[in-house]
Amino acid sequence: MTNTKSNIRPYKSEDFDQLISIFKLNTPTYFDPKEVVDFENYLIQEPDNHYVIESDGEVKGCCGYKIDDRNSGHITWIFFHPDTQGKGMGQKIVNFCLDKIAEQANVHSVVVRTSQLAHKFFEKFDFKLEYIKNDFWGKGLDLYYMTKETS
Image (tube, rainbow, N blue to C red; front, side, top):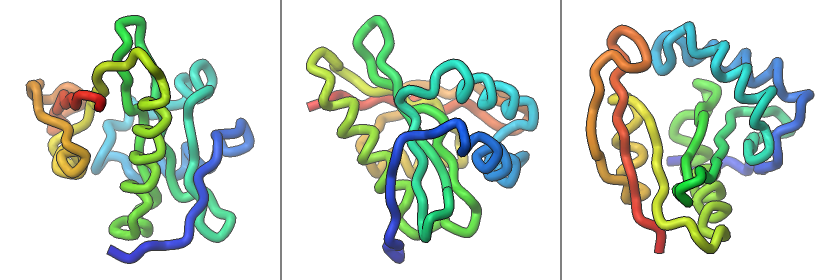
């Protein structure tokens, strides 16, 4: 893994088009094409705890989190430009979001809903697989529902 100098900052509405473009670069490999509308709606309706990661002033990816009414944290919408794989950005932004979740006093666990293509990445953060639903995201993209306890 090569560490690239990168910066994490809150999402701004000016990032919308660039994130949609990066999202589409990950479709259909990591996301079903119908999910772009879900992501667009998320950015419009729930952008408060969403962050982008930049390298050399360019947005390279994003990740967010939310806290539900049962005091569980959720990692949301994580993806990156394909040319950034293996450069440590995913680890950096997930750790950033996990730290933000940990700042919430009453949060007892964190959930990530991912696929068979990314679940091994989340195992590195001690997420444990709870269950799988085949073709959940789209044909050939299974839901891997994973959790971890907060410390």
